Length: 298
Image 1 (cartoon, helix red, strand yellow):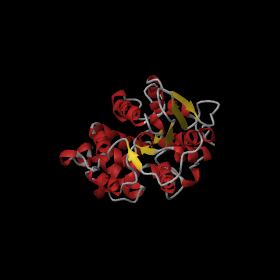
Image 2 (cartoon, rainbow, N blue to C red):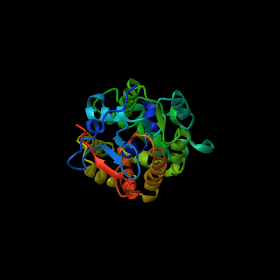
Image 3 (cartoon, helix red, strand yellow):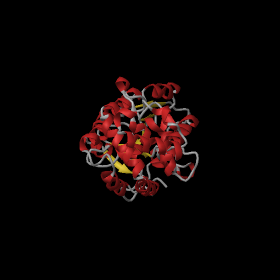
Image 4 (spheres, rainbow, N blue to C red):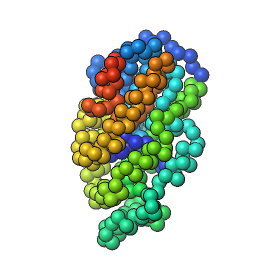
């Protein structure tokens, strides 16, 4: 589940407006339970905005508030985890799906374990396993999530934001390249990824319940509750992989934002899992001396 809140490569593979007056944009929220935040102070000429996304949702569950629209329209540039409006991103992603050194899924499992996975993909997902022999196991974990959803054609918050950016004639830029995001998966042992895939299949009802809870908390913008759920999820139990997927990337993004925000107003949309916690983007920005305030997003 955490993967859908922290990294967006999987959602890609499977799935002119003048600035307005600041007062019309920055309506503050009464508490920290919101997905939309304003960053100001520390020498910034203009405020910037941070928004937490969920990489795979049903379209009917996606709510884009008027304040979010105003924040995006008032920004000079839009940044996502990757340059989502570049057609080459999808094509490049397909090139980086496979494991290195010719590694195959059969190499990572016993014969009995592999048959369980093969049977699940064939019977439950209607996908022949031969298509995915070289694919990194964590990519396959992400392929299980549409099965947890009520709608047949899942979308994502990023897709809606891309349409808004197009309406406002704004180009989307990326904090990372797809090559880097793919390399993140190479930094986590394939054997560990393989165990996670098998665990998700064997305990599918449990993970579906966890997914439903996380989705509800996201829709209700309950960041504190989401943080607790993320801490209990599959990656949260292994701190070294949490550092690879979250902490190091958050630090890198904040270092970039310090330069990018100096003279421009940015609208930054990243997985909601990156916002929360001691090493989350919001807290890291506060540590750098910025004023980070919750905005009303309903």
